[in-house]
Image 1 (cartoon, one colour):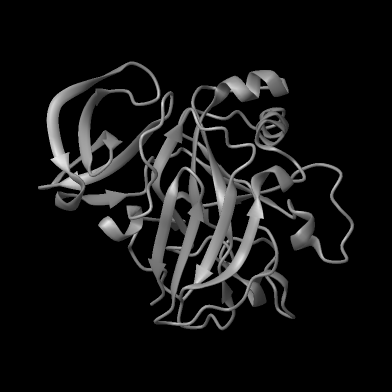
Image 2 (tube, rainbow, N blue to C red):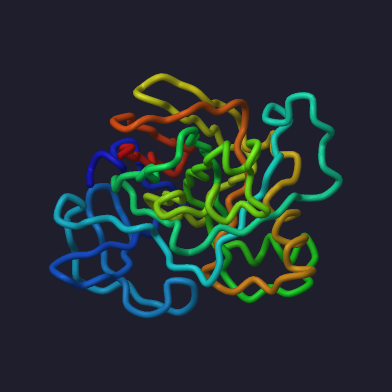
Length: 266
């Protein structure tokens, strides 16, 4: 488990790191302080208390940090990813099924008939309270925190000659949504460096300030049509170009202040 959090930053004033983990058959949330976890009791998104129970990070298995009621994502949200395409007039939203989510350090599994599966390193927004038809300011207040995500995509199923009507499998196949390792609350997510590495080589690198639609704008827009519930997550888009992954590859999504989401490809 340590590998996925090896570069987790030191504790910063006003910033709290939350993880979800399993230990001896039990699943719980905890506040992470360096290599130590302080188990919490209650609602992580609402009222909770930090208990006296402490565990070492090396003793637990990290899980994707929250179980949402729905997973949404934004396409075409960095100019560097658009190429020659016209920038969208509003956030381009799609769904990923909850079953696509994958734990930190657990593998991305390529389906047998998939031939062109790509990584997409992204900042992920975690919703903290029920939001319906909210303003941008209300959306800002309703964002609980942020984490790292990989919006894994099968390009042939998405855009190929025999593409599907919707991206239900191109972006929603099992394990196509790694997320974690921690949710960070209190971080200024408006200008963080995002970097994706494939087998140690940097393949994506951009600041989140370059998002065409920033996090509060995305959340406000979605809430005009779909009510967001506490714990829902939104993948906010990927920068630059992407490339095919193959079994045996290692992909890392690192976001400043959050840590490293590391996955092997199987």
